[in-house]
Length: 346
Image (cartoon, rainbow, N blue to C red; front, top):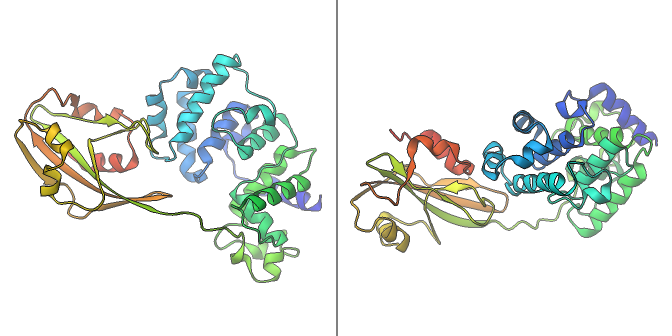
């Protein structure tokens, strides 16, 4: 209980002024938690404000098209979060009459909500005594108690959840949960934590052993996949292009230029002989140029994409129906958006 009190005292004096902390509206809290998964607060703030402005209620979000949701989400990555957010909003409106689930167990039934998000919403909005465990919490507990079990191992997940629950201030679960998360984000940071002014420094295991950098322990399970993308940037003489919607993968339902994926970097000769290229430009005059001299490297969590943008100037065809002047309205991956910001279509 002393641990919780110290955290809460620190939090009440040092917490950041964030808009989702001014409310116990579960829609706003849910929105903030989904946006801030795998996202820093400084990056996620503008997205949160954008969603609240465009979709002030769960009814507004449910009524939106998926393209509208993905366009607002563009740049945040992990697009399944946005798709699940939209699906859950529809479920709440269509199946629950717009009433947000009020318990941890019911919240878990929503698509895209796991233990952490359900615990956060249940404790902050409905005062249910269920502890959150996110990256910040793992770090604080691992360092303070000297727990060397890997946080991404099944045993570690169970140990940390149980400990977090035992430490929880059951009378003020929402404040406690926000306090420990904020403490991890602001004080017990991944790199260069402020141990000298930490209110827990006289009882922290890791600090006493001069081993702060050794915690938390994480098993290295990530295998990086290498992929080679060749985008065909069509530019017809009537200022039209072609984009297609991805039907699977991390960028599902986002738009991109026609794609030729290869096992290795290819040159123009190999590109022009590819079946996709031949079918797309059959019986058309084309002029092809490589937009960047160097291959672009786009790094994601589990894969590195080596991309080339081949600009194909060609004649008018009904195969190309998207006016260049409208292309910015479509939700696209960051890789495509960055290209569009550099490419002059006029």
